[in-house]
Length: 230
Image 1 (cartoon, rainbow, N blue to C red):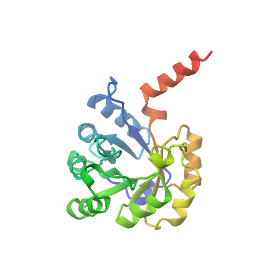
Image 2: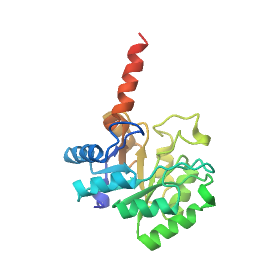
Image 3: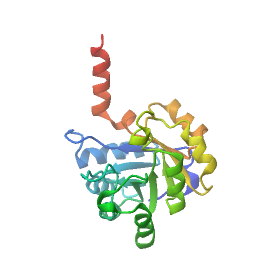
Image 4: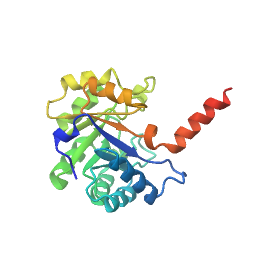
């Protein structure tokens, strides 16, 4: 269920995902973590794959779900909901918001972002979250019709590989130049409650936190590496 704008303000969206090969990557585990997040005040969850979206929708029928599908293709670096097939699958599984890569990079099979956005809005009536890496791509995505703009890919594209999230410098620029009706979402690298507060101070409407809350595999590995350094 999509929350109205007032309820999204200064809200937390928990990204409930697990890497390939992890025992946590089971629909029932993802659904349990999503329910725990919602029970403790998250306004919504961000989920990867139609299977996990469907599992959470069944367990938490009133949840606000931001859905995506990560798929890799040999002819493109784009992997977050890269094409029309993935958009349809995420929507059919029960997502309220569809997150997709909205960078200017080449998409699989030469699909065009503008055409995908237009079709998602006209054929599905979907709300779209543009995962971007830069000011230019964020503004372009909003102009194309994406209602949410997230800093998800800052530091994760070829053009921003030398930068490290959170996107502290990017957020104020986006807030100043995005249309007032566009929601600005801080996602990527937020590792503490204090950093989440900082994101709101810099202009974000809501904050997505993943690894710091639900990333058991990555968190345990990070602690192990730190201790092995002694």
